[in-house]
Image (cartoon, rainbow over all chains, first blue to last red; front, side):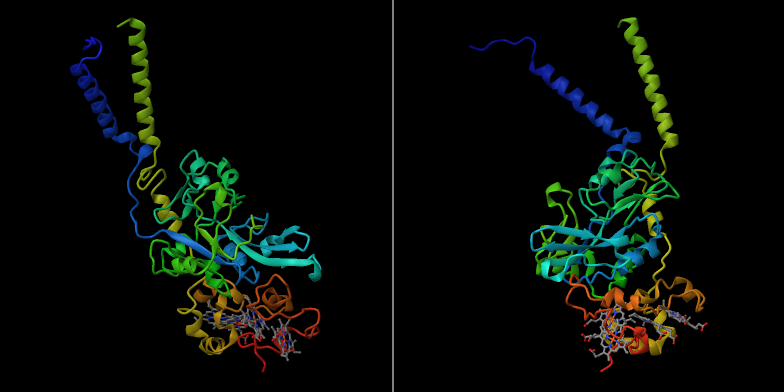
Length: 254
Length: 148
């Protein structure tokens, strides 16, 4: 038995569908709203930068921290850093001690007598240039973003200094520039990259503990580094899509 | 259509029109070129000045004898500017005053002082024992430090 349904005729259904589809199409053509929902593809699909840091090669000289401050006009005081080095000491009883006097620039002391040390090493730190970066997601004005080649950058002319991103970064890689009141962070020396030079921290490293490269190029040093070592990222549980890969990363490092 | 709905619609239309006009004037020109940000910011980041210059194109052309010494020594992996600081001023106008020349024991100690955390790739000395009266450079040539 077929029951006639007066409210839903086929003709009416098509009509309504047509109207809705047409409306959506029309709305998508409204060009002034384009920026807000831009789906334009990035212009350089072939580069996607990643970073590799080798804990087994780091000697904790903090040349990277010094060079970064000089290259990028990072204020010497208060103690802000784009790149710094931490000394981890794990005692025989399992206690974890971390120190980083002035980001490593002031030199390290070992507070634990050698007989009590289970393991000790340096961990160089910098921006993870996350692909799903929490810091860019919270920006209310679009002043921080992931560049088409995968570098997280700041637009100081557009930043309002609200500090949301400073709070959102789980790695502590952002600070407010005291003179401008806008946020600042590691740019992977974008100004050098684009001129074919290595970032300052990598140029001055005496042991080659730092490298960067194109993750999408299977022949790059970066991809080889990831393949040839047992690499790990910091705080993988936060799903930040970190592109900073450490060789010989211990569980204790956070 | 009831009159109050009509008025409300007019109010909405006026509001949206004002919003679009304001947006047109307040939105920076390159906003949305690549994503939800000012496209020009990429160029601005790119245009910042370089301070650590290309060593091969600068230092080595003038200081070729020192470079040759360094190139055949254990310090060959170290960039001149790791020890001497950024060279952009010195390269434009070579003066003694605009480049760093370290001589303190602590300077060599940055890399060579004994610390169990230091990777085994580097030879370490106890700063309080290894010839503690003298500066390192009075015995070791900083560009070719091996003495034997």
